[in-house]
Image (cartoon, helix red, strand yellow):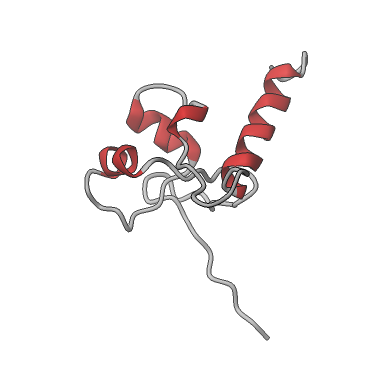
Length: 90
């Protein structure tokens, strides 16, 4: 039996999921958000609180050597766009 490591937000303790509330930010922005504690983990909501603004696509870490975005950033962006475009939730 393989035990998976779980990742939790260091601010609110919510579990972080790659396809839901995880983003990878540009290195210099992550340094700012984490206050230099680069091993910390934060969910998207806590990142936005720390930034004092919503996360935007320009905040994402570029995917080096690929024309495709980093998977967690792609999933996050698609989820946010679908919620925004939904007349019930957005």
